[in-house]
Structure formats: structure tokens, C-alpha cells
Amino acid sequence: MIEFLQQLLNGLSLGAIYALIALGYTMVYGVLRFINFAHSDVFMVGAFVGYYLGRCVPAGTFWGASVVLVGAMASCAVLGMTIERLAYRPLRGAPTLNVLITAIGVSLLLEYSGQVFFGAAPRSFPPVVPSAQLSLGGLVLSSNQLVVILGTAALMWALRLVVLRTRIGMAMRAVSLNPQAARLVGVNNDIIISFTFGLGSALAGAGGVLYAINYPSIDPLMGVMPGLKAFVCAVLGGIGNIPGAALGGLILGTTETFVGGSSWSTYKDAIAFAVLILILLLRPGGLLGRPTIEKV
Image (cartoon, rainbow, N blue to C red; front, side):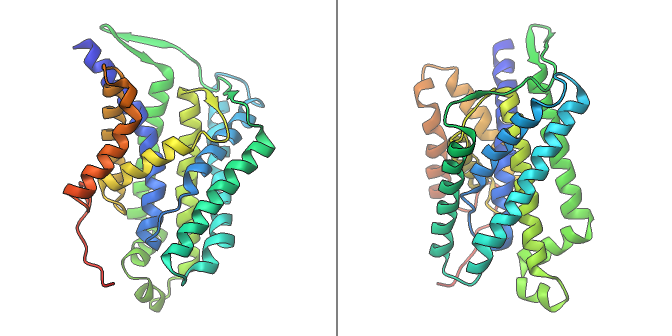
């Protein structure tokens, strides 16, 4: 029983990170109906911003960790809005394939620019939070896991407040539902779309820092696999559905952890793509999504 709970805890901490990245995918899809494949590399940039900020603040302090997290989120928000303005906005009315190819190009640009500016060798993330082990009746809980789970819960709660309780959140929902009607009632779609990119990228930046706290080795290609798995989480929960992205992240993270602790551990990375194939075959709308009819 203790071993089961330990695996569950490890899975929740990994799934929380997947959920943060998946939220960015699902928010952009909900507003623009396309997948921003550069989002996983924004996650990588967030980890590196946290790395450089972490070397400038005292290790193991609350305010130092806060500076690292907020700085990474702000930097990634600016990066996300810049990508939207320079790469995606000129293609707003273009075919979906053009936007998809551009997203892949931006992803590769960020990855190889990261190798130029940050170096290709892995780096050890500084200890920005105090590391400690808590034992609860045989269950071992590390402070890093606690920070990841609580930090993710706080960010999701804040996102829910923004989307449901603010004027800009109402505008985001209006643009997602019907961009033309939103424009007719005075919503500036360009500002809302830019804000959506910034908000999703800020969550990716936070995910990069939290991932590096738990798995303290970062490199310019670190976002590839977590980004793909987070995309699977978004599809699993229902692409465009914010609670669905969070649910998908927790399910996939937990499943992957249990498989990693079994005799099937060699196939743990394949689990994500097996889940993607199954969900597309059995429930294309996702667990919390609704099937839609599109005219082609």
C-alpha cells in the first residue's frame, strides 16, 4: 500500500507539470483552433531563465524561489506574445497547414537558438527551494514534489479566476465561441489572442521551472518529450477544454509513473502515444470534450 501511494504521489507531481504545459496548448487551440507546437520550447526557455535567475538569488529561500518563478513566467509571456505577433498574426487568415508548418519552424528555431545561446551540454539547475524529505507513516514526500503540486494547484486556481471572473477572461471565452460576433460587440480580438498566448506561455515558463526543480538537469532539447506528452494530455482531456487538460495531465503522469515502476518500464514513453491513439479511436472529443461537426 505504501509503495502504491508513493508511486501515486510521484505520478501526481509529474502529471502536474504536464498539466501546466497542456493548458497552454488547449488555451491557444480554444481561441485560434490550431496547435502551437513551439509551446514546448517556450517551456525550455522558462527553465533556462529560471536557471540564470536562480544563480543570482540566495538558494533555498522563499523570496528567491518566487523571483525565479515570476521572472520565468514574465519572460515566457513576452516571448509567447512576440511569437504570436511576428509568426502567427500575419497568417491569421491563411490555411491551417501554413500555420502548422510555421509553428514547427518556430519550434526548431527556439531549439537551435537555445543551443547557440545556452550551449548544448546539460546544466544542473540551482537549488532554488530548500530540499528536505518528509516521512508520513512510511510515505516519503520531498519538498520539491510538494512545491510542484502546490504551485501547480495555485496556478490553476489563478487561471480559473482569470478565465471565469475577469472581463478579459469573458472576452477570451467570447472570442473562442465566435470571433466575428466578439468583434462586433467591441472586443479587440488581436489583444485577446495576444493575451492568450502570453498567459499560456507564462504557464509553460512556470512548468519549466517546476520541472527543473524536480528533475534538475536542463538542456535546449528538454522540451521535446514533455511537450509531446502534454499535447497528448490536452487531447486526452479534450482539446480546448481547460479542466480537461488538467485531468489529462494527471492521468498521463500517474499512468507513466506506474508503468515506469513495473517490468514494462522500457515502454513508458510509448504509453503516451498509445493513449493518444486509443483516445482518437474511441473518443475523439476527449474525456471532457464534446464531439463537434465541421464543414469541410
